[in-house]
Length: 355
Ligand SMILES: Cc1cc2nc3c(=O)[nH]c(=O)nc-3n(C[C@H](O)[C@H](O)[C@H](O)COP(=O)(O)OP(=O)(O)OC[C@H]3O[C@@H](n4cnc5c(N)ncnc54)[C@H](O)[C@@H]3O)c2cc1C
Picture 1 (tube, rainbow, N blue to C red):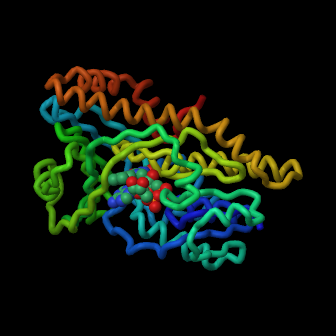
Picture 2: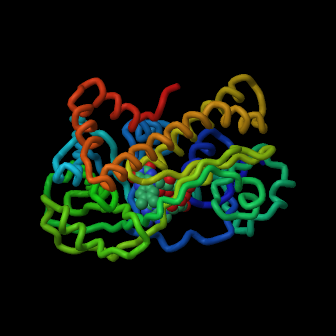
């Protein structure tokens, strides 16, 4: 027995596939069946992380839709386009969450190194002989007992998500509007479908269709799916591990979705785990809990800094809307015109911080 993964979420499955590809035995414990997939969920994955997926997880290209331009608008500057990012090949790609999960499940089901175990997750798992237990489950008993000390923030907001169908067009530009209520993103997923994420301050339910029509300026909409909503909170765990149990995914760090970076942070974490495992194996050593210690040492400060940067962007636009000024939007517009800074933003969104 080598590695045990708790939970069967997107993070769990991605990590499991990375590990079995390295010849590691993985048991995935989950107390619930994968819920009916939410067809409105999409995930934007950075170019650098796609390269990692293709090399170490599986060839993801066939289920991706590539985006080569991002346009950012600010309502505080009369909906002016304040920032653009362009890459002839692609800046990032979008995938339907359920397609990625189904693909990973079917690959893992075929792999003899991976076993799915449907069981209630209790402290008894700690007594089993696993070298490392990786906990990707936000709600099990182990999480409640050992991973509850967090730096938390309630955004007092909901994210509304949906997908709409439209007339066929060259759909390679993602758009983000910083509105007075919060950021609204249009994320293309095919020539005829685009997903929407609107993070809205306040707990009052909104009519998403109304806002899609208000901010849409290039789609001939045919139909809009019924929207889903999720309350927005951020959190960073104070301690990444307990003995040989390592927390992972949104349990480790959960951020505001405005930059579409939550899962990208997790892929960067998976890269680090892989690096540590390869170094152990390369030195002829067995996997053990020192991986948890090294992982925390190498990633905690990066993840904390990255989470806080996303929060700072959110708070700056929020403050600007509140005081009805446009200084931050003007600053962003100015910075975006500087080629070096523009390239720096693209690099950070693509690869995270290098410190
Ligand atoms: C609205 C929204 C949009 C996001 N977009 C991106 C993105 O483009 N790129 C990226 O790298 N990360 C994105 N994320 C973060 C990403 O979804 C999570 O980091 C990732 O799913 C965590 O995986 P998990 O396996 O730990 O948990 P999972 O089992 O995948 O899901 C649990 C998490 O999903 C979130 N969630 C629940 N419903 C939805 C929904 N309808 N849409 C999205 N998330 C939901 C919950 O906040 C919870 O933390 C987004 C998060 C939200 C809330």
